[in-house]
Length: 394
Image (cartoon, rainbow, N blue to C red):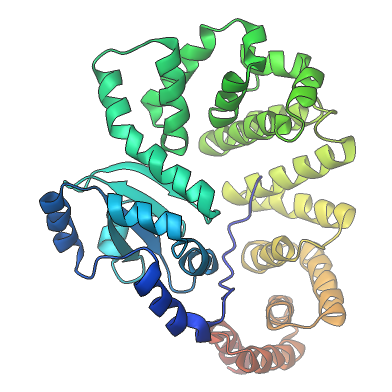
């Protein structure tokens, strides 16, 4: 919820296992096509099979997990090798193809017909049984879509179609879902298949369905103790996305109110924290830095700075966009405390950067050099740190 878009590239599996893993896959796992993309399409036409595309990056930890533990699963491998032409897409090497498919996260799995058209997609790592179920669901899509286009509209079919679409839902499918919900009696929303559809297709907070959920939240919590809160969080996220897309502060105020109306899902103190974080993220996105800075100061004063990534992102924003000396000084104080608590190249660099902005160049240069030394020791790309040092030495 309200995720800060910070990408930290971590290798979660040892590279020294790579050779062994590749050999194991070659012998027992999913067999990936050896040629290029055009050749894979030709192979798919010749063998009358769809293509499974594993879009990955060499630095992606979850991708390595899938390689080592899921693609080598015997049941998974048997199904994929029988059903698909399997293709590995390195998003950093085959950039044009990756961009053409609109890949934004890794791993992404594409199911593509022999003409190169995607008919199903999914993201993120998962366990073998879920991954296998995903592939089998994907294979249902062409026939389900064909039935729908031929006019099939029975309630049972619509439920099956909407459930299968899932993450692949487009604007048309969401409209179908809306029409389906309108056809239901409110009490039917508690039925398992309809509850699942409410999770997949979030309802707006002012919709009939969501109002019924709020009014009867105890029943939902009792019947779906591990999943009922997803209805609330998905609707909150939907409202947040609408606020971002329209850059509407009014929508943000509605969001803040909504967070207080779900005590069975979100405790009061947590609702307040989520609201504050949402406003901070909103003002960052809209680049209203005069509103962002005091909101960030208030947030970190009240809720602490244990969410280290969020704190460092805010510090970076202060360095680049905030001008009031009192706000900069407050952030600098927190960074100094962070360095004392646990010194690393990131907080050392940001500490030095803020000192530079406050015209304390001698102190800034000392910390920037310390940051560079730590970064080099950890074999981290230190170009931005070196640039700061160069500016300070001029």
